[in-house]
Image 1 (cartoon, rainbow, N blue to C red):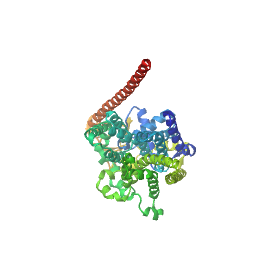
Image 2: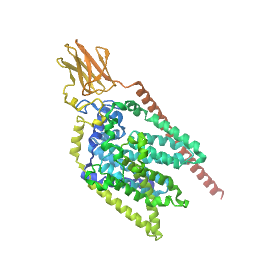
Image 3: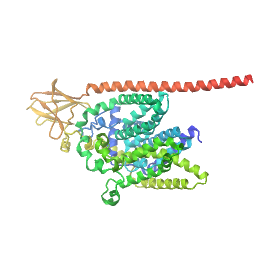
Image 4: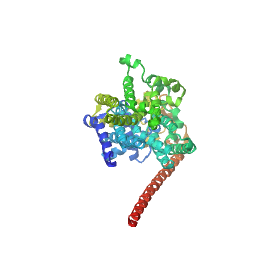
Length: 564
């Protein structure tokens, strides 16, 4: 149908069309936008200063700092910061990033669908994934930036999972490890949900004759994913109890999973009280089901012609079911599932599978129209009409930010009050009133060094006192006074305090990572090197075999012609 470069160009056109409203009206915005740019600004500045993997935003919260980057997956912000370097501007970097994510996600869906079916179906699925409502909504209504970035990676994880399960060669297992590691480093909730969906999909693809080999490959791949991402999770996993985000506050009221199920009748009867707009999420779920419906009907027919659709249909159906209160008993019992907070997050997975199934359904609809069967084309036409209407509704209802507004917001983000969800559990807002970097009543302070991971200062002689440092207390800070280690503690408002003796005090305060973080970084670096080298070697070997086969065919053909 298309040559490769024409198909890639067409998918790029899909991405540009999806971004046209943003190009014209401005950058879409959402509740978490300032937090995303705080992280991106921290990464940009600290990498420029030589800290390749910062875990502390030194200026956020009016100088008390922010530990959010220790916990939040960093890949989104490295991409934004890298594009900021290329474009010289946060606004253009953001536009480029969103366009690239639309393109990458559609390309992944195309490659995966083409692997399962054919070229035409792959292109249609790529178009559907670009414009399916929830995918657009992630950008235009909610600006779920990290989740949106993750939706560009998830299709590749399913592509390489399918290849790993279906092919006898292990060459796709390293690619599965790479794509899933990137998913982990982008968005944890979608990693959890995507991981569950990948497990369902893998079970559907099990071949009894190769069961042992398939399980072994998946187990080894999982080990490599853990090792490749160890530099990230080794920092925050032992420290979860120190951060406010894990407190009961962020799993109740608005953030309570029990209040965020879809297809609940009250979403339509209490519209005035629905601050979460869950009725609109209901609409997006129903549209995804409508898009997938023709293929679902084919998949569950008694005849086996469409049996290859079954793994897709089963994974789609279970993912959609997990958005509804019918699965609440499962949510109640699985604590790790509750950590994603919102059952409607499953719409990211549902939309991905709906796009692939929809590609099959529309292809079948075209075939039915040539056979003069009217029902299937009518369903396809209705589906596309509803999809287009809701897509336009999403784009029109977005709140857009101009170039100047974004520049102002990013500049203000560095020194503004960050989300208290990333504050240490000891922190209180009253601390933010402190103006001095070091408060020592009745004694003078001379600052020598004040960097993200080190504060060095001298306190003049006077009465014994406590120095209140303009930094949130965190157990990783280690202090020395006149060369002697001293204890660091939080004051009543969560600021870091150190006891200062009566004589002159030369104070050194350093943020020290535990030994296992360094070890994890080494393990990750070595594992990435091994996996990338293995991937490169396997690809070269595969191409070498194809080249050898082509050469042999040419030689055989030439020999046949000469003998004739």
